[in-house]
Image (cartoon, rainbow, N blue to C red; front, side):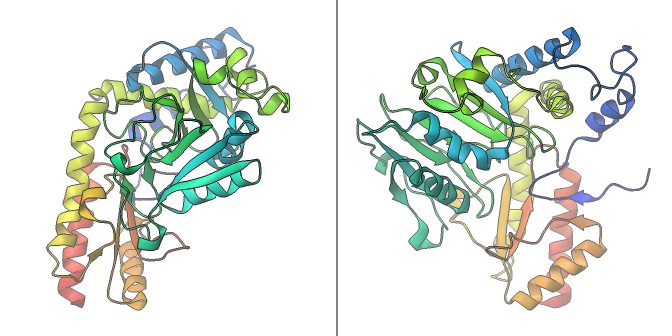
Amino acid sequence: MSKRAHNFNPGPAALPLEVLRQAQEEFVDYKGIGMSIMEISHRSKEYEALNDETQKLLLELMNLPSGYQVLFMGGGASTQFATIPLNFLAPGRTAHYVVTGSFSEKAFQEAQTLGAASVIASTKEAGFTRLPAAADINVPADSAYLHLTANNTIEGSMFAEFPNTGDVPLIGDWTSGILAKPVDYSPFAMVYAGAQKNLGPSGVTVAVIRDDLLARVNKNIPTILSYATHAKNSSLYNTPPVHTIYMVNLMLKWVKANGGVAALEKANTEKAQLVYDVIDQSGGYYKGIIDKANRSIMNITWRMGSEELEKKFVKESEQNGFVGLAGHRSVGGLRASAYNAVPRESCEALAQFMAEFQRNNG
């Protein structure tokens, strides 16, 4: 095959070559049944076994205790922005949101369409360049829930600590941070993530919900939109995205085979540091956007002296085999999304390219 691109796309994102090759080998004939995984019934014993194994693998890698349900849902994380308040924002209660970037702001805006929602902490006035301290987030005891975004994909920030919410359910959007490093997820009543960053290709969203929160589901909503429906039916109430869940299964096995989440944290920290070192040692040529204490190891963001120079950087990077380095269209700048499957070699190559670009264009 031709040389693989240095893929820094923010999602859909890079997948491990080993995973792609295994999927290729099994594409036509899954486990000798004479059919592709995309052709079999989601009611078949083969798919039910895959569905069950994938749920258990995820809980194992998240090191969660018993009492959680894994749901496979459609619509991406953006659909969860509305589904969460639809299920859990009871009349007379207020949902509280920590707004630290574009997606957390969208989640808050969706909640407002369904009930009482309030921003309890925000760094918007600071341009989302930092995160609030966890100790400063004090949620009222009668809150419906507290929602935060653990890793901000567009801005490039990542929480290291989380607020103590007591009996108030803590809900986290982990789309671009799940399995990036070992985390104690047990304080969370719900964690959700679009698969297309660290879990597989696009097409499925994982929701991990604690049993006590499931018991609070609003019973007066459409059946298909109720988390209780999907939990009761083990995500088989309607036809799931079978092939995407199969790919998630392969990804989780890849994580486990490569030392688990602790090994990924070491690799991810080192990968990100390669790029951050170039930024920090460039004398201001590359300007990091996020306060150093809040930097993400998944999404590395920076600016340059002018938009023209940034466009030239992106153009030359593409000519040198790099993909996905332009910042999100809403904010501009540059961004390298170094998710779990991005190899260290790609980050080394990016660091070298950045240093050379500065020498040639400084």
